Length: 247
Ligand SMILES: NC(=O)c1ccc[n+]([C@@H]2O[C@H](COP(=O)([O-])OP(=O)(O)OC[C@H]3O[C@@H](n4cnc5c(N)ncnc54)[C@H](OP(=O)(O)O)[C@@H]3O)[C@@H](O)[C@H]2O)c1
Image (cartoon, rainbow, N blue to C red; front, side, top):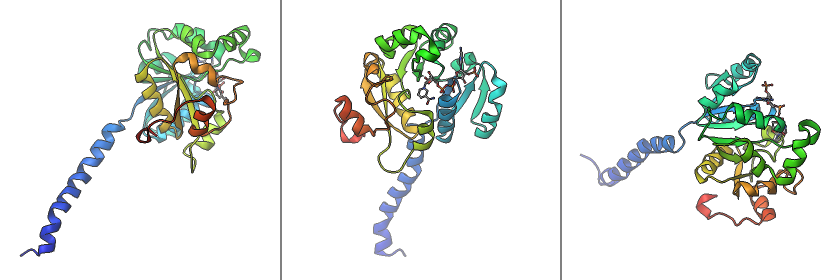
């Protein structure tokens, strides 16, 4: 015969068992791995590919010479594959674009059909010494406007442009308050996807607003490559803190 104590604990134990059985499914649903195409798997693209594979995502890293990415992919294991930029654009539910800014107009034309309607995270920064005259012009008008012109038909988010590739590697999931990553875009759903990918890379997303506001974290601004926390970024950019549940 069961004791009064074990009888009174039974419903609690049953609830705990239910919770234990349900929890992994709920977690898995909330965090289903994504397929991410990486166009430009250099310093930034290669580092983010590594962080996202560690977070459980599948990546297709691409190059105009795919064979040179085989060693990286071997190291990353079965969740990594190698291909061409067009294959990365077709593979990804979201695509990271991380090429020298001067190549953005050409890549935008080449991949227009392959990534139409997809979330594209653009890390590019215009540097006149590398990218020529267009970089001067695009610094003036801001990268939100410039990239939107070069990348028609995608759900564009400016992201990961205001942190150095070395800090991406070293500060991911650091102890204490994480480093904040400013992002901007015109599409709310795309900003949600980008926020998740920022978190999965080990950082805190800060939505700065529509693409027009991406210029607030372009090269030369007070928040560019300063390793600010999300709280500090919001203070500097005058963005109200999100409700407690969203932090
Ligand atoms: N380095 C940083 O700390 C940092 C920080 C924030 C933002 N950014 C910006 O992010 C972008 C990438 O920077 P990165 O330092 O990662 O550059 P990177 O190491 O030079 O890598 C760029 C990649 O772009 C690819 N690429 C170049 N031209 C291309 C084209 N026409 N079509 C397709 N792919 C092309 C190259 O791949 P293949 O030659 O193999 O095809 C290369 O692996 C730049 O705009 C940069 O300003 C850099």
